[in-house]
Image (cartoon, one colour):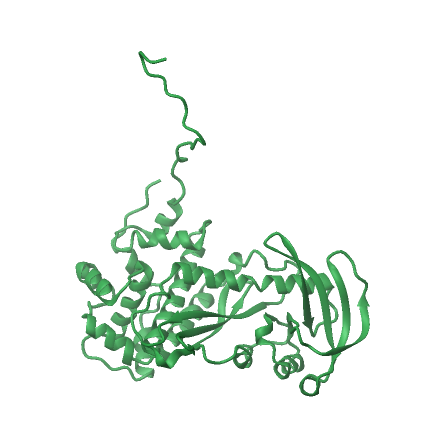
Length: 404
Protein backbone atom coordinates (compact mmCIF):
# COMPACT_ATOMS: atom_id res chain seq x y z
CA UNK A 1 0.00 0.00 0.00
CA UNK A 2 1.50 3.32 -1.09
CA UNK A 3 1.11 6.35 1.23
CA UNK A 4 -1.13 9.20 0.12
CA UNK A 5 0.36 12.42 -1.22
CA UNK A 6 0.02 15.75 0.59
CA UNK A 7 0.25 19.43 -0.33
CA UNK A 8 2.71 20.11 2.51
CA UNK A 9 5.87 18.37 3.68
CA UNK A 10 5.91 16.01 6.66
CA UNK A 11 7.87 18.48 8.81
CA UNK A 12 5.06 21.03 8.47
CA UNK A 13 2.48 18.40 9.43
CA UNK A 14 4.43 17.73 12.64
CA UNK A 15 4.73 21.44 13.43
CA UNK A 16 0.98 21.90 13.02
CA UNK A 17 0.53 19.86 16.22
CA UNK A 18 1.89 22.91 18.12
CA UNK A 19 -0.80 25.63 18.50
CA UNK A 20 0.00 28.53 16.18
CA UNK A 21 -0.19 31.31 18.78
CA UNK A 22 1.68 29.49 21.54
CA UNK A 23 5.35 30.13 20.68
CA UNK A 24 5.03 33.90 20.27
CA UNK A 25 2.89 34.12 23.41
CA UNK A 26 5.57 32.36 25.46
CA UNK A 27 8.33 34.43 23.86
CA UNK A 28 6.57 37.63 24.96
CA UNK A 29 6.08 36.20 28.46
CA UNK A 30 9.78 35.36 28.84
CA UNK A 31 11.05 38.62 27.37
CA UNK A 32 12.46 37.23 24.11
CA UNK A 33 12.57 40.03 21.55
CA UNK A 34 14.12 39.52 18.11
CA UNK A 35 14.31 41.25 14.76
CA UNK A 36 15.22 38.56 12.20
CA UNK A 37 15.46 35.08 13.73
CA UNK A 38 11.97 34.71 15.23
CA UNK A 39 11.15 32.54 18.30
CA UNK A 40 9.15 30.23 16.02
CA UNK A 41 12.12 29.84 13.65
CA UNK A 42 14.29 29.01 16.68
CA UNK A 43 11.89 26.33 17.95
CA UNK A 44 11.46 24.84 14.48
CA UNK A 45 15.23 24.74 13.94
CA UNK A 46 15.79 22.81 17.19
CA UNK A 47 12.90 20.46 16.40
CA UNK A 48 14.47 19.78 13.03
CA UNK A 49 17.82 19.11 14.75
CA UNK A 50 16.14 16.40 16.83
CA UNK A 51 14.10 14.85 14.01
CA UNK A 52 17.04 14.77 11.58
CA UNK A 53 19.59 13.81 14.26
CA UNK A 54 21.86 16.68 13.21
CA UNK A 55 25.36 16.61 14.71
CA UNK A 56 26.43 20.27 14.61
CA UNK A 57 25.30 23.85 14.06
CA UNK A 58 26.70 23.78 10.52
CA UNK A 59 24.87 20.53 9.83
CA UNK A 60 21.54 22.13 10.84
CA UNK A 61 22.01 25.43 9.03
CA UNK A 62 23.33 23.93 5.79
CA UNK A 63 20.52 21.37 5.63
CA UNK A 64 17.83 23.98 6.26
CA UNK A 65 19.39 26.26 3.63
CA UNK A 66 19.10 23.45 1.09
CA UNK A 67 15.37 23.21 1.87
CA UNK A 68 14.64 26.92 2.39
CA UNK A 69 11.82 26.81 -0.15
CA UNK A 70 9.95 24.25 1.97
CA UNK A 71 10.82 25.98 5.24
CA UNK A 72 9.20 29.37 4.61
CA UNK A 73 5.61 27.97 4.27
CA UNK A 74 5.93 26.55 7.80
CA UNK A 75 4.54 29.66 9.53
CA UNK A 76 7.13 31.93 7.92
CA UNK A 77 10.18 30.21 9.39
CA UNK A 78 13.59 31.45 8.23
CA UNK A 79 16.98 29.78 7.89
CA UNK A 80 19.45 30.84 10.61
CA UNK A 81 23.14 31.55 10.25
CA UNK A 82 25.44 29.45 12.40
CA UNK A 83 26.37 32.30 14.76
CA UNK A 84 22.74 33.45 14.97
CA UNK A 85 21.57 30.00 16.10
CA UNK A 86 24.46 29.68 18.56
CA UNK A 87 23.65 33.08 20.07
CA UNK A 88 19.93 32.23 20.35
CA UNK A 89 20.69 29.00 22.22
CA UNK A 90 23.07 30.83 24.54
CA UNK A 91 21.05 33.96 25.35
CA UNK A 92 17.33 33.25 24.95
CA UNK A 93 15.63 32.19 28.18
CA UNK A 94 15.38 28.37 28.22
CA UNK A 95 12.41 28.61 30.59
CA UNK A 96 10.42 29.24 27.42
CA UNK A 97 11.41 25.81 26.05
CA UNK A 98 10.36 24.18 29.33
CA UNK A 99 6.97 25.92 29.36
CA UNK A 100 6.45 25.14 25.67
CA UNK A 101 6.93 21.44 26.38
CA UNK A 102 4.35 21.37 29.18
CA UNK A 103 1.91 23.55 27.22
CA UNK A 104 2.00 21.29 24.15
CA UNK A 105 1.69 18.15 26.30
CA UNK A 106 -1.33 19.57 28.17
CA UNK A 107 -2.89 20.75 24.89
CA UNK A 108 -2.65 17.29 23.30
CA UNK A 109 -3.90 15.50 26.42
CA UNK A 110 -6.85 17.87 26.85
CA UNK A 111 -7.86 17.82 23.18
CA UNK A 112 -7.44 14.05 22.76
CA UNK A 113 -8.54 12.36 25.97
CA UNK A 114 -7.26 8.93 24.93
CA UNK A 115 -3.71 10.09 24.22
CA UNK A 116 -1.33 7.75 26.04
CA UNK A 117 -3.96 5.59 27.74
CA UNK A 118 -3.56 2.73 25.27
CA UNK A 119 0.23 3.02 25.32
CA UNK A 120 0.84 2.36 29.01
CA UNK A 121 4.01 0.66 30.15
CA UNK A 122 3.73 -3.11 29.67
CA UNK A 123 4.97 -3.71 33.23
CA UNK A 124 2.19 -1.59 34.78
CA UNK A 125 0.39 -3.63 37.51
CA UNK A 126 -3.03 -4.35 36.02
CA UNK A 127 -4.97 -4.46 39.28
CA UNK A 128 -4.18 -0.83 40.19
CA UNK A 129 -6.55 1.89 39.01
CA UNK A 130 -4.78 4.84 40.65
CA UNK A 131 -1.89 6.53 38.86
CA UNK A 132 1.58 5.12 39.56
CA UNK A 133 4.44 7.58 39.10
CA UNK A 134 8.06 6.48 38.76
CA UNK A 135 10.71 8.98 39.88
CA UNK A 136 14.33 8.72 38.73
CA UNK A 137 17.10 10.68 37.04
CA UNK A 138 19.43 10.18 34.10
CA UNK A 139 22.91 11.65 33.83
CA UNK A 140 23.92 13.42 30.63
CA UNK A 141 27.71 13.33 30.29
CA UNK A 142 29.33 16.60 29.22
CA UNK A 143 32.88 17.94 28.85
CA UNK A 144 34.34 19.36 32.06
CA UNK A 145 36.88 21.79 30.62
CA UNK A 146 34.19 23.41 28.42
CA UNK A 147 31.36 23.47 30.95
CA UNK A 148 32.44 24.67 34.41
CA UNK A 149 28.78 25.21 35.41
CA UNK A 150 28.22 21.43 35.29
CA UNK A 151 31.22 20.21 37.31
CA UNK A 152 30.34 16.71 38.48
CA UNK A 153 33.62 15.02 39.32
CA UNK A 154 37.25 15.97 39.04
CA UNK A 155 37.59 15.47 35.30
CA UNK A 156 33.96 15.09 34.35
CA UNK A 157 30.94 17.29 33.91
CA UNK A 158 27.32 16.28 33.68
CA UNK A 159 23.75 17.53 33.59
CA UNK A 160 20.86 15.60 35.08
CA UNK A 161 17.28 15.20 34.04
CA UNK A 162 15.12 14.32 37.06
CA UNK A 163 11.82 12.88 35.87
CA UNK A 164 8.43 11.88 37.27
CA UNK A 165 6.90 9.50 34.73
CA UNK A 166 3.24 8.47 34.75
CA UNK A 167 3.37 4.73 34.07
CA UNK A 168 -0.30 4.65 33.02
CA UNK A 169 0.37 6.68 29.87
CA UNK A 170 4.19 6.56 29.79
CA UNK A 171 4.36 10.38 29.59
CA UNK A 172 6.31 12.80 31.82
CA UNK A 173 4.32 14.57 34.53
CA UNK A 174 7.21 16.60 35.99
CA UNK A 175 10.87 17.14 35.09
CA UNK A 176 13.90 19.11 36.28
CA UNK A 177 16.94 19.72 34.07
CA UNK A 178 20.00 21.02 35.94
CA UNK A 179 23.66 20.40 36.74
CA UNK A 180 24.44 17.03 38.33
CA UNK A 181 26.12 18.49 41.43
CA UNK A 182 23.32 17.77 43.94
CA UNK A 183 22.10 14.53 45.47
CA UNK A 184 18.92 13.03 44.01
CA UNK A 185 17.08 13.24 47.34
CA UNK A 186 17.26 17.06 47.26
CA UNK A 187 14.98 17.07 44.19
CA UNK A 188 12.46 14.56 45.58
CA UNK A 189 10.24 17.13 47.29
CA UNK A 190 9.82 19.24 44.15
CA UNK A 191 9.22 16.19 41.95
CA UNK A 192 6.40 14.93 44.20
CA UNK A 193 4.82 18.31 44.96
CA UNK A 194 1.81 17.70 42.69
CA UNK A 195 0.96 14.19 43.93
CA UNK A 196 -2.70 13.69 44.88
CA UNK A 197 -4.07 11.62 47.82
CA UNK A 198 -4.32 7.94 46.87
CA UNK A 199 -1.74 8.16 44.08
CA UNK A 200 1.40 6.01 44.18
CA UNK A 201 5.00 7.06 43.71
CA UNK A 202 7.90 4.63 43.40
CA UNK A 203 11.60 5.53 43.42
CA UNK A 204 15.02 4.05 44.07
CA UNK A 205 16.82 4.41 47.41
CA UNK A 206 18.83 7.36 46.06
CA UNK A 207 15.67 9.46 46.58
CA UNK A 208 15.06 8.24 50.16
CA UNK A 209 14.64 11.20 52.53
CA UNK A 210 12.68 10.18 55.64
CA UNK A 211 11.43 13.69 56.28
CA UNK A 212 10.03 13.81 52.74
CA UNK A 213 8.58 10.28 53.03
CA UNK A 214 6.72 11.27 56.18
CA UNK A 215 5.43 14.39 54.41
CA UNK A 216 4.04 12.16 51.61
CA UNK A 217 2.46 9.91 54.24
CA UNK A 218 0.76 12.91 55.86
CA UNK A 219 -0.61 13.88 52.43
CA UNK A 220 -2.01 10.31 52.04
CA UNK A 221 0.25 9.60 49.07
CA UNK A 222 1.41 5.98 48.93
CA UNK A 223 5.08 5.34 48.20
CA UNK A 224 7.33 2.32 47.59
CA UNK A 225 11.12 2.33 47.61
CA UNK A 226 14.08 0.13 48.45
CA UNK A 227 15.50 0.16 51.97
CA UNK A 228 18.99 1.52 52.48
CA UNK A 229 21.58 -1.09 53.45
CA UNK A 230 22.39 0.69 56.72
CA UNK A 231 18.77 1.33 57.77
CA UNK A 232 18.43 0.84 61.53
CA UNK A 233 15.03 -0.44 62.68
CA UNK A 234 13.18 -2.65 65.13
CA UNK A 235 10.57 -5.24 64.20
CA UNK A 236 7.13 -4.74 65.76
CA UNK A 237 5.26 -7.69 64.25
CA UNK A 238 4.98 -10.00 61.26
CA UNK A 239 2.16 -8.95 58.95
CA UNK A 240 2.07 -12.17 56.91
CA UNK A 241 3.97 -15.41 56.67
CA UNK A 242 6.67 -16.18 54.11
CA UNK A 243 5.15 -17.59 50.93
CA UNK A 244 6.45 -18.13 47.41
CA UNK A 245 8.84 -15.32 46.47
CA UNK A 246 8.04 -13.38 49.67
CA UNK A 247 10.71 -13.94 52.34
CA UNK A 248 9.31 -11.68 55.06
CA UNK A 249 6.58 -9.08 55.55
CA UNK A 250 6.94 -7.00 58.72
CA UNK A 251 5.78 -3.89 60.52
CA UNK A 252 8.84 -1.90 61.65
CA UNK A 253 9.88 1.33 63.39
CA UNK A 254 13.07 3.29 62.64
CA UNK A 255 15.65 3.38 65.45
CA UNK A 256 18.16 6.04 64.39
CA UNK A 257 18.07 9.31 66.35
CA UNK A 258 17.50 11.52 63.31
CA UNK A 259 15.50 9.03 61.25
CA UNK A 260 13.11 8.35 64.14
CA UNK A 261 12.60 12.09 64.50
CA UNK A 262 12.00 12.55 60.77
CA UNK A 263 9.69 9.51 60.40
CA UNK A 264 8.01 8.91 63.81
CA UNK A 265 5.34 6.45 62.61
CA UNK A 266 5.54 2.79 61.59
CA UNK A 267 6.68 1.44 58.23
CA UNK A 268 6.16 -1.78 56.35
CA UNK A 269 9.16 -3.85 55.24
CA UNK A 270 8.86 -6.52 52.54
CA UNK A 271 11.78 -8.72 51.49
CA UNK A 272 11.21 -10.66 48.28
CA UNK A 273 12.99 -12.47 45.49
CA UNK A 274 12.65 -10.50 42.27
CA UNK A 275 13.62 -11.78 38.83
CA UNK A 276 16.18 -9.56 37.10
CA UNK A 277 17.61 -10.60 33.72
CA UNK A 278 16.45 -14.16 34.30
CA UNK A 279 18.04 -14.43 37.74
CA UNK A 280 16.41 -14.17 41.18
CA UNK A 281 17.74 -11.41 43.43
CA UNK A 282 16.74 -10.62 47.02
CA UNK A 283 15.47 -7.07 47.53
CA UNK A 284 14.17 -5.25 50.62
CA UNK A 285 11.35 -2.74 50.09
CA UNK A 286 9.70 -0.26 52.45
CA UNK A 287 6.30 1.36 52.03
CA UNK A 288 3.65 3.25 53.99
CA UNK A 289 0.80 1.01 52.74
CA UNK A 290 -0.20 -1.88 55.02
CA UNK A 291 -3.18 -3.16 52.96
CA UNK A 292 -1.55 -4.33 49.74
CA UNK A 293 -0.48 -7.93 49.32
CA UNK A 294 3.30 -8.22 49.79
CA UNK A 295 3.61 -9.44 46.20
CA UNK A 296 1.96 -6.18 45.05
CA UNK A 297 4.64 -4.15 46.84
CA UNK A 298 7.34 -6.01 44.90
CA UNK A 299 5.38 -5.69 41.67
CA UNK A 300 4.96 -1.92 42.08
CA UNK A 301 8.67 -1.47 42.61
CA UNK A 302 9.43 -3.65 39.60
CA UNK A 303 7.24 -1.34 37.48
CA UNK A 304 9.71 1.47 38.32
CA UNK A 305 12.02 0.02 35.67
CA UNK A 306 9.67 1.53 33.10
CA UNK A 307 11.37 4.88 33.61
CA UNK A 308 14.68 3.25 32.68
CA UNK A 309 13.03 2.19 29.40
CA UNK A 310 11.90 5.80 28.88
CA UNK A 311 15.40 7.18 29.42
CA UNK A 312 16.81 4.55 27.08
CA UNK A 313 14.35 5.58 24.37
CA UNK A 314 15.20 9.28 24.46
CA UNK A 315 18.96 8.87 24.94
CA UNK A 316 19.45 6.29 22.19
CA UNK A 317 17.02 7.79 19.68
CA UNK A 318 16.93 11.56 20.16
CA UNK A 319 19.81 14.02 20.13
CA UNK A 320 20.87 14.53 23.77
CA UNK A 321 24.36 13.06 23.54
CA UNK A 322 25.97 15.50 21.08
CA UNK A 323 25.30 19.07 22.15
CA UNK A 324 25.09 22.20 20.03
CA UNK A 325 26.36 24.53 22.78
CA UNK A 326 28.42 24.46 25.95
CA UNK A 327 26.57 26.74 28.34
CA UNK A 328 23.72 25.75 30.65
CA UNK A 329 21.05 27.64 28.72
CA UNK A 330 21.90 25.92 25.42
CA UNK A 331 21.87 22.49 27.09
CA UNK A 332 18.42 23.17 28.57
CA UNK A 333 17.06 24.31 25.20
CA UNK A 334 18.23 21.08 23.60
CA UNK A 335 16.98 18.74 26.34
CA UNK A 336 13.53 20.34 26.54
CA UNK A 337 13.22 20.30 22.74
CA UNK A 338 14.16 16.61 22.77
CA UNK A 339 11.34 15.94 25.26
CA UNK A 340 8.95 17.97 23.08
CA UNK A 341 9.97 15.88 20.06
CA UNK A 342 9.30 12.71 22.06
CA UNK A 343 5.75 13.85 22.89
CA UNK A 344 5.01 14.81 19.26
CA UNK A 345 6.23 11.42 18.01
CA UNK A 346 4.22 9.62 20.69
CA UNK A 347 1.13 11.54 19.58
CA UNK A 348 1.70 10.59 15.94
CA UNK A 349 2.01 6.96 17.06
CA UNK A 350 -1.27 7.30 18.98
CA UNK A 351 -3.16 8.84 16.05
CA UNK A 352 -1.87 6.31 13.51
CA UNK A 353 -2.28 3.29 15.85
CA UNK A 354 1.44 2.57 15.49
CA UNK A 355 2.28 -1.02 16.50
CA UNK A 356 6.08 -0.92 16.38
CA UNK A 357 8.86 0.56 18.52
CA UNK A 358 9.58 4.21 19.25
CA UNK A 359 12.97 4.01 17.51
CA UNK A 360 11.30 2.72 14.35
CA UNK A 361 8.74 5.54 14.13
CA UNK A 362 11.63 7.98 14.55
CA UNK A 363 13.58 6.49 11.64
CA UNK A 364 10.49 6.32 9.42
CA UNK A 365 9.64 10.00 10.00
CA UNK A 366 13.27 11.10 9.66
CA UNK A 367 13.30 9.59 6.16
CA UNK A 368 10.29 11.60 4.93
CA UNK A 369 10.73 14.97 6.66
CA UNK A 370 10.82 16.94 3.40
CA UNK A 371 8.58 14.60 1.39
CA UNK A 372 5.08 15.72 0.42
CA UNK A 373 3.38 12.64 1.81
CA UNK A 374 0.43 12.37 4.17
CA UNK A 375 2.23 11.45 7.41
CA UNK A 376 -0.46 9.24 8.97
CA UNK A 377 -0.74 7.35 5.70
CA UNK A 378 3.05 6.78 5.74
CA UNK A 379 2.88 5.36 9.27
CA UNK A 380 -0.13 3.16 8.55
CA UNK A 381 1.51 1.72 5.44
CA UNK A 382 4.72 0.87 7.31
CA UNK A 383 5.31 -2.85 7.79
CA UNK A 384 3.06 -3.97 4.90
CA UNK A 385 5.93 -5.01 2.62
CA UNK A 386 6.42 -8.67 1.75
CA UNK A 387 8.58 -10.90 3.93
CA UNK A 388 12.36 -10.69 3.44
CA UNK A 389 14.20 -13.51 1.65
CA UNK A 390 14.79 -16.63 3.67
CA UNK A 391 18.11 -16.77 5.51
CA UNK A 392 20.07 -20.04 5.59
CA UNK A 393 22.52 -21.05 8.29
CA UNK A 394 24.65 -22.67 5.52
CA UNK A 395 24.43 -21.85 1.80
CA UNK A 396 22.45 -24.40 -0.24
CA UNK A 397 24.45 -26.60 -2.63
CA UNK A 398 24.68 -25.24 -6.15
CA UNK A 399 24.72 -27.56 -9.19
CA UNK A 400 26.43 -26.34 -12.36
CA UNK A 401 26.37 -28.15 -15.73
CA UNK A 402 29.53 -30.11 -16.37
CA UNK A 403 30.52 -30.31 -12.70
CA UNK A 404 29.91 -33.22 -10.32
